[in-house]
Image (tube, rainbow, N blue to C red; front, top):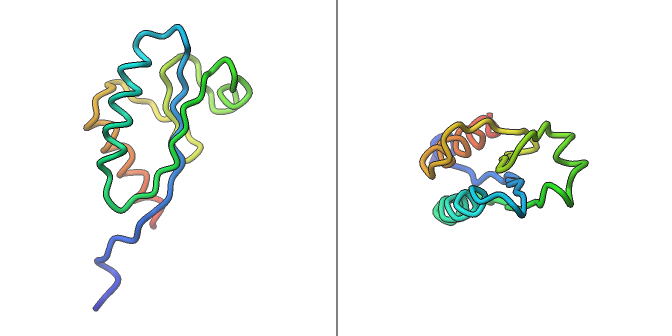
Length: 99
């Protein structure tokens, strides 16, 4: 059987930068957690980072506001915080890593 068509599970770091005073962050957190739990075959190391407590990391990535998402150490610009957009962005990243 050829391994070319088999999906090999990838591993990726996902960081969600949030602010304790951001009302939008709670909704984004819930959406992201639900989406991540439904990803088959992917190992996701998910971390929520309070931007005030992880300021150096946030600055290094270029975070300018919350909520902010980094996948694989890269800040991802997501204009729409819907689960299907999260999923598409994460799957694109996993596919690109496998190449």
